[in-house]
Length: 267
Image 1 (cartoon, rainbow, N blue to C red):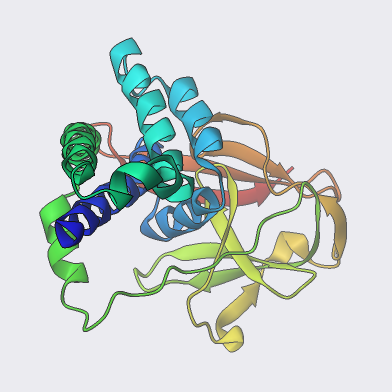
Image 2: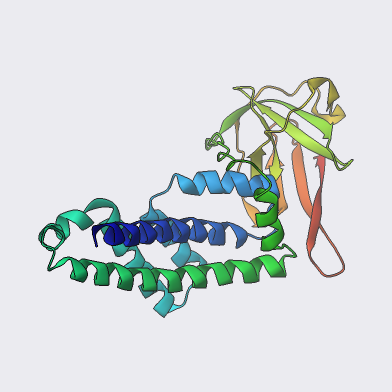
């Protein structure tokens, strides 16, 4: 009985982690037109948040109806209780063999609720991925090719303002030219759906080329890496010199689906 109780408790905690990460995933894929690298960056950012902070984002994005939000609140209570106080709350029941079946019954009921919520969150994410042309099964298959689980990539958090040392042109693996921003700590960044995103791929600095219009304007202090946007991939970054701005605009296909972006520096 003791082993079975611990097994069911382990299953409940496992499902709590599935749901919490699943909700992070749902929040990220609900952000239109993000790149794969940007997904990793947002996942790292949201992994630093408390579940209460994630819950506020869920409500702001209207991802669940009122009944679903009630379930999210109940999940939050269960999650915190399992993590912090469950064995304290059930010390007497667990210590008496004749009362242990009550603990087992409660854990089984918790698991049944968690399984339903987990399936709901996963279904919502699958539907969003499908609309965006992504295939979750293919992503899972790709991940399972590894011999061990890849560690989560870490990203540096942007400040409200940064010192910009240089902007260069770089030809990426797809053959297109993208802008590369070098900040004061010598980290490299490129553009994403709403400003800068950290660029973590290996890069040969000899393949970075100067932008003619940006000669002799660096360093730029108090540079805002998160410009106000009218829509994802549609914004201007103010370079604060000579009236120059970097204009970022989306490129969409015939089905109105985001393909890539175009950029230019101009007054």
